[in-house]
Image 1: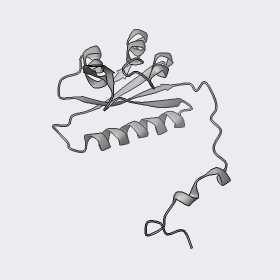
Image 2: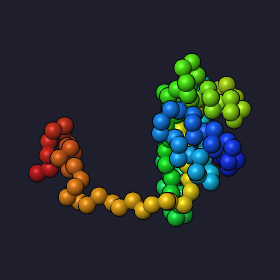
Image 3: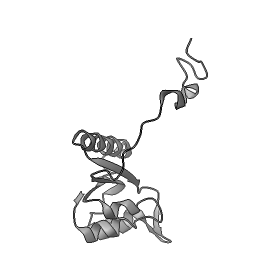
Image 4: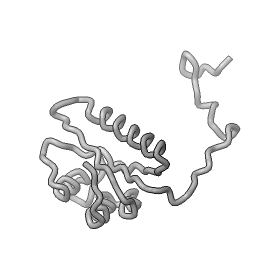
Length: 132
């Protein structure tokens, strides 16, 4: 579900206690939903769709950020998914995985240098086996 309304974006930015405030400043956000009754793989399917949207945004020169919603609470007694469903009028069969905020990046992220990458955490062919 694509959201462009500033009031709704502000309300989405508080869908969980921490980690979604950036949504209020985005010109657009996509609320990624799936139907668990249709597929037991809805989380995986939605994750693939969300990351693909992020790659597409990057290809267009845009930035994006992921705000995880599934498994979070808006407040005591209300999950983030329930809050968002009420806010956007989602049908009961849909569950919210995340919100992808999309816009022009406010900062340039500098890539890690190769020597700072944790290649020591990579195993080859068998857990714990390092590259020969």
